[in-house]
Image (tube, rainbow, N blue to C red; front, top):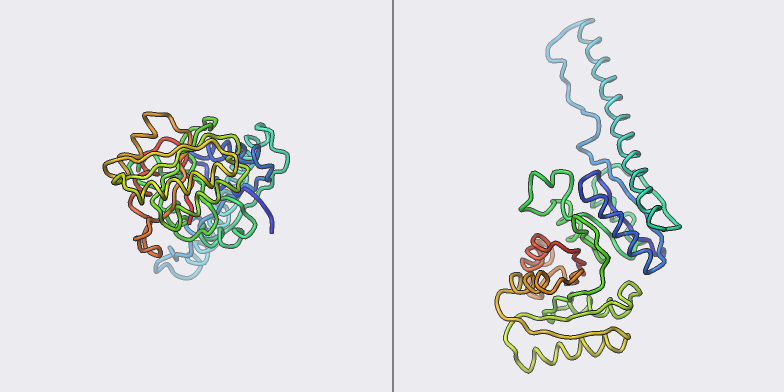
Length: 284
């Protein structure tokens, strides 16, 4: 099994940030970076017969012309994909990463991730894709599909890269939240960072016990750790804490423990990714 950082680049305004965050992860972990650009099926040459009811030689000539246009379009799409990967590689290389590979793949992005996921330690993707400016209030559809399907941590890059020193862990006691704490304790990525574990709800003995257990695990790993109990709605309270205290990254479970895992991303998770201006790491 490999230990790659899989970074998905699509030419959107988020792609540069994806590359810079992937390089930052590599610098802290020593892991190589693989840059992947997917040529979606929608970009494949069209199969539609546009010749209508034209007959005889004219129809044949038109079909040949359409076939040539399809071939030209396929070449252009491929050249564009390679150019995107070349630009991405230059960004990662400039950041000091020694081991970089690139891969141009055809097909559905989720199927493509499934093929390479076993090689990855983390998947880095932008919050939105190439239509970002047209949908500022929505997450990219590919992001949601990848989070539902992925078994590795998904690092959702913010629009701009800023060096990260502090981490907020959104903790609800669920399985994916506990997995997130364990991952932080074991990963070189978080070494030397300051970690705050926060839960939202009543300040009960049970809540304090859960936080104390999480804090003990992180402190045992040598991490400077503190805890918080916040009141209010989770997505609002957590987002306000991130904004007010300038956390550099949020780590949380992709699903609350009462969510239907196979159908939706947890509502709090979706709201946090949508509203936070910092990277969010999602754990299954």
